[in-house]
Image (cartoon, rainbow, N blue to C red; front, side):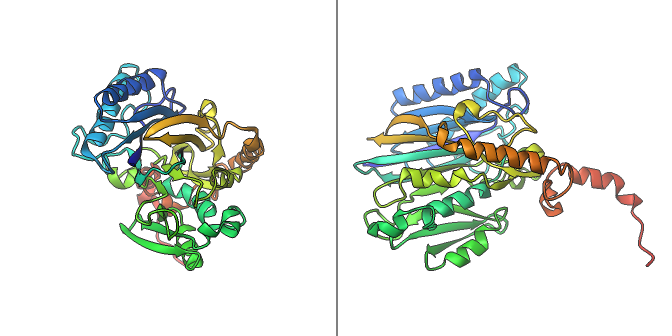
Length: 370
């Protein structure tokens, strides 16, 4: 059976500030998706949040980029926005960059990670959700899960994984993409994805073996809000969907990279580097300096498209040291205040509010005599 797993998110109003999502917004989303399930549009759904982002997890048989599914998400976000405005929540509807739906939410503000695939006898799927960071924040953990033998033992001891994977990488500045083979082109891949603000992993495909090579096993949202809006209106807060087991990295191999709280761009006002901290949903509330950036992982088993779960995978003692290290890193970088490398380099600040400061004082600069 082919099923589509759609994860669509938007910031439709923070409570308070940029910290969390008000329960009324989650209730509205659950009501809308419940109607769609009764009408047969959805097989199943789950509504949650990460930080101030409302997250819609949906399964169906309509395929990727389906107009009815995207219209459902858009209508849900619009209704939640109305409630957010009534409650005077912060930044109500800030991710909805148009008043009218145009057939697809891509390019309209919300983040989207969708994949259509043939459901296996056992189909574990993980929905990852980040807050206060950018799409490239997934580059390191996705690379380690699918390409690093020091992380993923299956690359060494499972013959079905020896051939490796194909990474689809997007250049989000030039709007181009390339598919590259792992392990053959590993160093070339790293040369690109190490520049995470420009080159992002969009999809991972199996190269050969048990799984169809045209069906992705990982997909990441790549929407850049500042590119869509032409100005800074909030960080992109990416999401990802990853399949596991049976010719793919095991569940624990997919999760293990997050035990290292790597540095990501975003945090306060989208202008600072900081550690990404793996947390359970109950702790996905961004408070300290609007952070530190968070990542949540919800695990499901699919059964004919039904979501068996979720299991809150980072709500686990196994990630306690990662959280402690993240807080230590947060202490260290915060002491830099407005100085780089805590604050992003100047070229990455173009779409923040910094240009308004520069515009204010530009006429006071004088030519150097020496």
